Image (cartoon, rainbow, N blue to C red):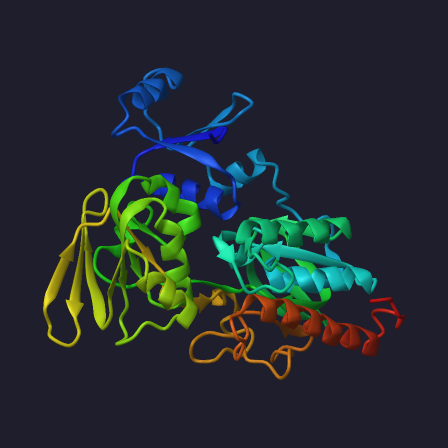
Length: 401
């Protein structure tokens, strides 16, 4: 059982935020819903001398936090929240596979680099249940384990890693690049690599926003175990991610309902065969989710058959949404060229701002595959090395592969 305990309620937005923060950083915790657990409510009141402030988060050392900010929670967890210096050869924005691969190669090239990530190191890979197509792991590997290996290798090379701190702006600065951080710091570098990746896309239907974290989720690994013993869980999305996460969820629920907007599933044939032959799966194609209902938790999913117009009303314990990704580029608008979907436009890996490069899922034209992101991070670093050498910021030298 997890050592950290989170006391809260499904209607509490700060509880949702804290749970999401812990999940993103792959910190296990036990969730106690004080609306359903009388003993949990009594304990919270006793701890607070009659108060009921939530979330109340209790740690193994006996300490606790009441309604903490993400920064307070990060400090309690021992995360590094400030860059050590004001200037580096290279600032890498994003600590997913592309950013970490670039940082490892930078260290081997003698390039002084820092990684800054607004969320948790490891990116989307870290919250993927299982990765079956990454070379070197014939039996597959858990996403969290692979992400932890990336991070451990980066630490072995002494790379400075700053997590839970976002970059809010980027601008040229007398031939260098200036980054403005969410903690108030400013970091300058000879070059920057944008490897911020992407985030799960929302449905955009009535009821969704208020139910996120209260029955509507975007990470099966993070939230699936809370629904052990459920009669039904619903997965929106028939691509590889949807079916992979649905297979993971099948260990917790008696029935998994897959809902796909398109006339056919989009996942690989191997995944489709696994799902269609699995006794716990029901698949609906050409079907659109139009509304999510419930207060304070999800109670009903309303969907419409796109061919006949017939409405479906389902009552899953939770709905998990895997309908694609949106780039994490909000802080780049007006700074570098983006395409109409918000992805970074590059020539090879160079963006429209001198000294700024991009790699991985955030780059327009990328394949949105883990192996490709690692390769792009390395390729971008080699381009950055050449740029730094051309501008006499690093001395050309050879390092054994």
